[in-house]
Length: 220
Image 1: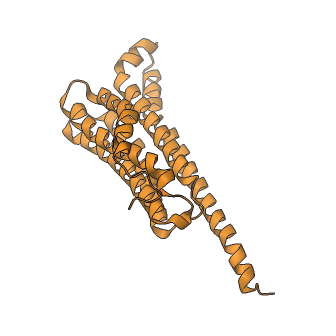
Image 2: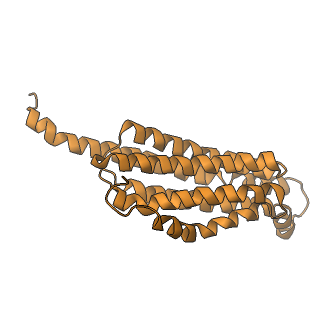
Image 3: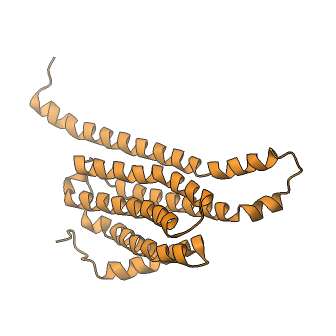
């Protein structure tokens, strides 16, 4: 028996909500896998030490691989922070437009790319090129999240609004600025990946940026 037009209209919001839930669940699964992959270079280094046959000392391993450990911790914290930020954004969304879905998949691509760039930061000498690859992945991650936020605001029917997204957009802008500040520190100073500590200033810069953003229901 065919559904009447009124019944189809009543079912449509449920179908859209279910579709949004599936996309969010898929996104969470991809992020979880990517976070697991981050630790693989360290696992391989542990296996390499034990395969040498001598009695290894954990202190020697910690000293030899301290940069890899730092890069793992930094990347793990970054993925966790921006997953949480992504979660706060999409939990307001009832339905996804095609552009919103595409922006979300670009964000997922950057998440999947991060374990690769993290492994490269462990395997290769930190220089301008290597730092550019790592920072480039982060710029893509934050930029695609910002794009997703803008698309959500442009589609009020999705369930979110400028008022609820304003702080998240300011955080993304602040993150993008500070990641670009971190690039020359990583590439050209002895601090290397300790330069990522500038991201600790994201809350402060977010507050400053938010002051200059419209506070109304729309960005216009």
